[in-house]
Amino acid sequence: MVATHNFVPRALLQGLPRRRRPRHTRPDRRRGKLHRRLLAYRDVVIYHSPAPASERAQSLLLVYIRRVVGEVTYEVCEHCGSGVITQVHVTTPLQDSGLGTRAVSHLRACYPDVAWHSCLTQRMTRDLAHRMRLPHGRARLSCPHLLRDAAENRGSRAQQAI
Image (cartoon, rainbow, N blue to C red; front, side, top):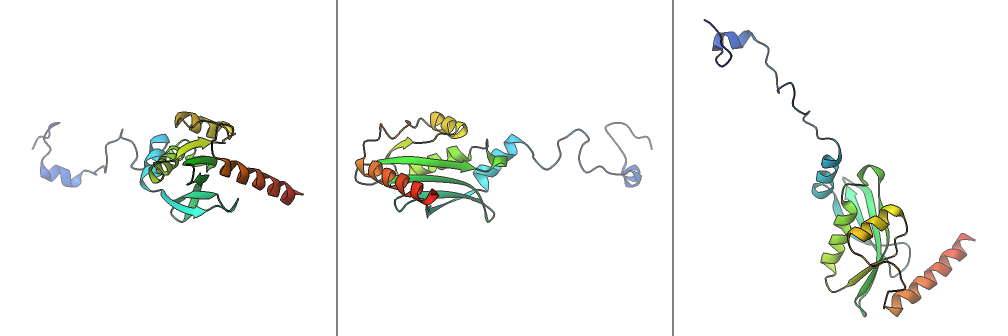
């Protein structure tokens, strides 16, 4: 029997070694930025918990298989309808995977009537606040409750550091 490019007889196929996948395809395991983004949206779970910073502060824990890979600390005033995001931390391998954006979007979905502001000072977190259109600074914050609590917390942190 003669084998051509399009047709290989079954008898010849039994003796030929089979390749599992074509030579020039990507490996089965995804790597890089796209893989991190898919992992962040598919496998990372968001949990609400009280933050250890103050009694009013709360946090979102971003968990991937029993490991905390990120945390967003925030404060909400139910009386005034305003909220402040005070800290965003995502581990280095997942830094540009969209987890911060997902967490802020989750906060906006959980508290739809709250006007959010940010106090983020690091470059990566400032970029997140800019992308998510969060006004910066406590000066614009119209809630006196959060300002008073923030001043008290800063004083207690300074005393703890001494």
